[in-house]
Amino acid sequence: MGRLDEKKKKKREDLLNATYELFTSKGVFDTSISDIVKKANMAKGTFYLYFKDKYDIRNALITKKAGELFSVAYEKMYRKKFSSLEATVICAADVIIDQLNEDKTLLEFIAKNLQWGLFHKVLLEGENDVSKSFFDWYSELIATSGRKFKNHELVIYMIVELINSTCYNVILHEEPVGLPELKEELHQLIPVILRTQEIVEKS
Image (cartoon, rainbow, N blue to C red; front, side):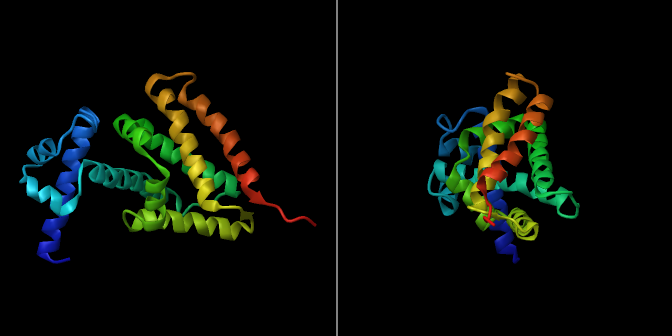
């Protein structure tokens, strides 16, 4: 990467970091582009070299932050061996949940903004090589399991959405149960999702 490309990448990262701080403190609605460039110490015209508007940078942030979640899960798991596909997916879910529990600001941001289109972008296009590798690793797990599913992209999306929707109140308010209890329930539900999406060949 040349020096000019490095400068462009740094400016984009600075804009993303400034925006994340503002969005998680003031909210998307109450944050203006003027606020963003002021915090990033840039001219307003610089913003438009990278993003169309504040919703464009919000989408880029969601893609980045969700990609980082999958990156950590991939890094922690890709060398490990598990007894079953279910055990592997449950462990991946736990890694993601633990990250959200450690960073409650990230949890709130992800919970409010994650959408299928952005989720699909993170997994299939990859915000970086590692987040893309997570989906490649997951796809390989499905292939080597010898099992067939109606739509394995939908399977992982359903599991992530289940985590996203159930963890919010549990982690932030410990309602209606604590996180250990929720994990136990999710460990029961994840195999059910896999079974209901599995194509079982009739003998």
